[in-house]
Image (tube, rainbow, N blue to C red; front, side, top):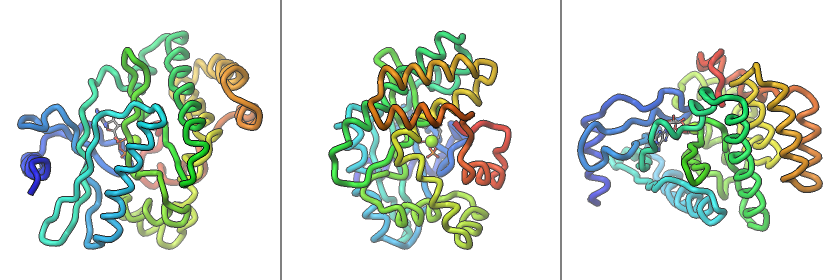
Length: 278
Ligand SMILES: Nc1ncnc2c1ncn2[C@@H]1O[C@H](COP(=O)(O)OP(=O)(O)O)[C@@H](O)[C@H]1O
Ligand SMILES: [Mg+2]
């Protein structure tokens, strides 16, 4: 048994308070003591489907490499499968980021100009990512929501590496979203209406979708700054994006951004309504 697996088992046995309950797939927690106390541990739904889970482990490694090669800063992140008598539990161990650097609370506390400066850096890094992966043959996605970013002195840090958005077809990713949802209700609804679940991923595989998604989330987070944020968004598209992508983003911004219908339904089902899922 590797040292990491041993440390993870010990941390799981002695689990502290969750860092955040707002994740869709997991409730990351930070061990109170021990060798992983400067890490967050994210556990995902385990099972007795080793082929799917071992493929997931490989894809996770590929995805972290892909992000890094594309210039995205990711905290040190490892993926392990913990074997509990044939029941395999996927676990991500990731270096903890200081609370004060999480983008969502930073954006909520900032004045308008600082909020826009933060968003501009985040949006710029999203555009750079898409440009960097444009020539790759695999199907690659990215979920750079406000909630999945931190911002330190060197710029944006992206930390949500699950599910690994590399190499899966739309149908396979739809199945993965169902398989790993923590909500039994969603798994139940999703098995009857699989397209509802499949559609969640579409924004993550669309460069314009991710950028408009970020702007829309910012508007929901800071409704009083709506006009300033939309002005900035258009200016960002004009100056930083090229041709088709620029036009797509500007066209989308011409109508008030809304949550994708699938997400709205999902949040209602999850009881997250009213808390902007950004
Ligand atoms: N490395 C980290 N350091 C500090 N907080 C984190 C870290 N990773 C996740 N979190 C917190 O947990 C939340 C959910 O984690 P995330 O990896 O985005 O999981 P999910 O796939 O469930 O959205 C984040 O929005 C953030 O508040
Ligand atoms: Mg997340």
